[in-house]
Every structure is written in structure tokens, then in C-alpha cells.
Image (tube, rainbow, N blue to C red; front, top):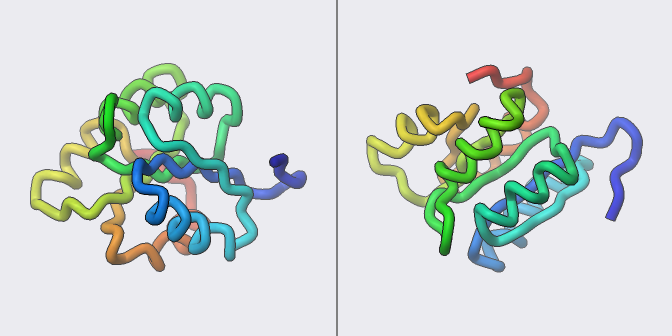
Length: 125
């Protein structure tokens, strides 16, 4: 799959195939080219290959978790924009996500917030 010139490229990193499909459907409606994988290690390699405009990253996955993967991506790509998309809404998760380099945080129950975030101004957090 390739993206058209000027098309937003989004990488979805989620270990649950049904949730990946749901996120893809929400994001692709905005005209984005969507790539996906199921773990943090693969996400790091795909980021280096695709240089997506946005990464939508789950926190809890097998192997490397989403915060560690976000840190690794941001370490070599400081301008990377990662939104943590999780069902873990405990009070510590947003702070941990931001400390790990995420530029946004969305609960899976609020997926309809994603198109507006992806269309918004560049996150520098």
C-alpha cells in the first residue's frame, strides 16, 4: 500500500486485530493512508521505513509495551508524533504516556476524537 502525495500516513500499533480494524475504519474515513502492526518492536521498524505523520499506539501489548516503543521511536526521531490509544484510563496513564514522549492520549471509548486530533496542529509535547 502506498500513499498519495500529500496524504496523511498513520501507523496503528495494536495487538487486538478487531480493535486495529476499528481504529483503521475511524482513521481511514479522513482520507489517511493507514498501516498497522501488532507490537512495539515491529512499530519501531515500520516507523523507520514509513516515517508516518502519526502513530496511534496501544500501551499494553505482548513484548515491548507502547510507552517503551514510543520512547524508542522518539529517541531516534524526535519529531515523531505518537498518540497513545488505550482502554487503560487510570489517572497515571496519561502522565506516563507523555513522559514517554507521546504527544496525545485517547481512550478507546473515545475513538471518534482521533480524526480531529490527526487533522490538528502539530503536537510538540
